[in-house]
Image 1 (spheres, helix red, strand yellow):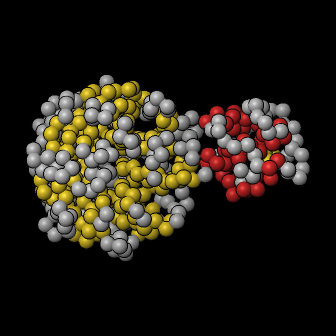
Image 2: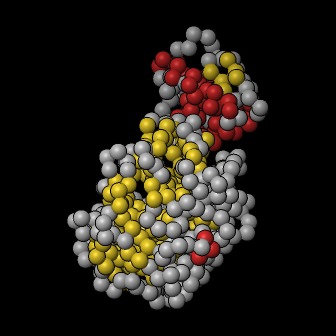
Image 3: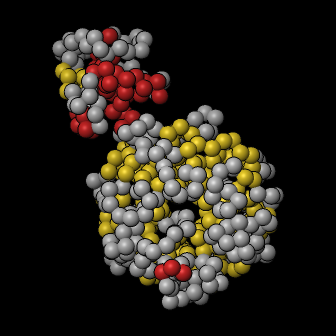
Length: 453
């Protein structure tokens, strides 16, 4: 990368506390040259295959000054060009590759916190956010959910659990704008999870008891118009028993089946519901649904296998994961083996890699992330667990993996934090250095929900 391409990124480098050296000119922020060297060398180690400077950058008009404190790895490039190379690599690592979204869950003014995601996994507040969702967060009790935010094509859908609405935002470059009519009624009380496939959206209205709901818990369907409006889908509502509302609802990857968990922390209320999705978007209960897992101890989050023939669900009290086979045609569901514990406390939230080989599980009480190998036949094997830096109390919730599988993001709800982990070659996690992780959401109460693109 030529240093002529860097001016738009130099300011970001200085704001992040990095000394910038280009063609003999030094722009030094609040850190020393030695600190800059350590940071830049760390980037070089993370990106050993980065290209050397181009011929254009190698022919800078002015010779670079010698900076004794800047020690660089061996390279074919002349020593005078090493600072340029470091800056180019650091700049590349900091370029935006996507976004991370979470809800600040403010009971008076629920907002979508928006972060720019860089190539090195780090986060910076995005110019687009935070975005007021024209609704309320939920206060007064523990929230058990997965999937409160969904990125669906050009839209971002987010729950307002305290005002029983769903906000729909259209992505326009780096901006997020409410579509006309947003937010839309959720079809029940305390919506906490939602899922979308093509033009069909289902919302899980949990009807949390502490929120004094006026209706029974349910999942209910909508048609998403090309303009982003949510239109109720006739005869789509499926009622759940009082006190056993859904914690998560999610379509299979091909959209032909849908699964919902219910029961939260109750042993006798733990259930998985499976449905076949009919051509008009309505649901047909699958055989054996709802199913109560053997060894059930509270079901919260789950993840689909990429083929859409299995789900892996967390068990709260037993801190374990259990696999279920789901027939992609009929939605018949059956348990596929015993729960596999993670030797932690309160497994609740899950995310799976695109190849389906690795499952990551967030543990609420032990404030850790567990890693499971997923065999071709769906059998699970624990690889290890990693603590979140600085976490205390019961505070680890939503978890998501980046689309490229290189980083895992985890919510610390009460402290309003997002922890960032790098995925190693062994699939275990290493948290990014202090100052990069965790990232604190500046406003709200217990943050909830997480989406990454």
